[in-house]
Length: 438
Ligand code: GCU
Image 1 (cartoon, rainbow, N blue to C red):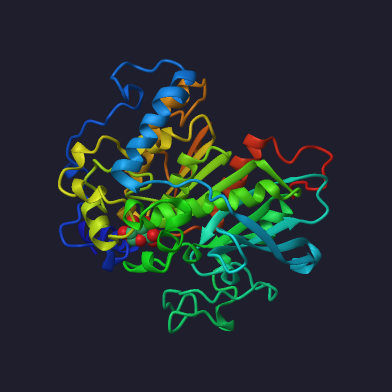
Image 2 (tube, protein in one colour; image 1 turned 90 degrees about the vertical axis):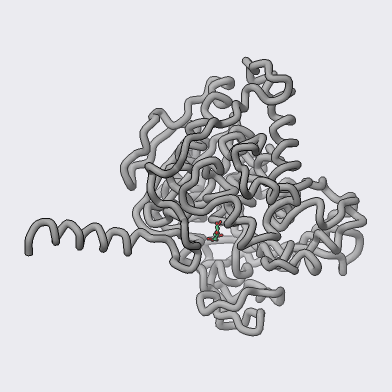
């Protein structure tokens, strides 16, 4: 075979391996870096009256609230507060879960008065024998708490589920066969062995993920409690709000160190995790996994998914005004680097995948990069490079980043980086505690 042919075949194979899901790509999707277009990013340090913000204190007092308000108004919709009658019920406890290595608690959070109020079920695993309160990873799941582990003690969700062979769901319901169908995305054993807890809840407890989902989700059922009309916020808003209610519970659990909670999320739930952490500074470390457009990647870059495609495919995800920018993203008063700036000075980790070009890995890297000036106000170092690192070579200090090989997913490799990042920032595990690294 001549060398040219070999090269063509190689390029074709690489494209086939790295292309995002074909059905997600409308015709005209740009994957050519030379066609991204030029753009000017709004300066987070000049939000408000245009006067440059020069200190962390001023950022917290002026810049941060102004940027947050812009995201609520133009992107995600309103974020309601904590309902006054919020209460919790521990519904089950197993001191010998996961072969005796963990404690499992299941908790229902009721968002209003009474035991039949709308609510959300939390699944919490804690390492057994910890010397004191432990740090916890938290994030919503796609398929019900029962899909996170094969632990038979987990309550099977009866909520609406997307029909999927992956989750073993049919007629929009889970069944016994659905248990443990997503364990590969949730390394529970590894987390507890490393001294971390895990707290998760099903995102469908807050709002079913379809266009009509708001009618049966909290945006409708909690209208009176939250004094908010469903159209004023969004599905991502509802999921993010739920993460803050999960945090409300964690603050009450003496086995949890609520000052060391890492919020994580993959893809659309990465978008939700970012919006939650932007609003709620109780989350100490923020991790975005392949969150893409409307998450970590820059809206102004025309590469992979665009704001218009996102709003067309998922009209329920964002707030009412985001669609106004479908054909004029350059007029958005914010871009996603400013969402990342709202995490400052907290440690933030952004992860991309080489095979997830739909999410625009370079746009994700650049958003992290352009959040750095806000981190610098607090004396915090960011990525330490202005060049995208090679695959599987994490970079960064207070802002971490990697692009791994493989497709749109959350993998063991991703979790390993998040654990190392959390260990580093928490100085964990401390010497002499029961939980020691392996
Ligand atoms: C679609 C969508 C993305 C989203 C992803 C996911 O691909 O276009 O914006 O992140 O779904 O949530 O898996």
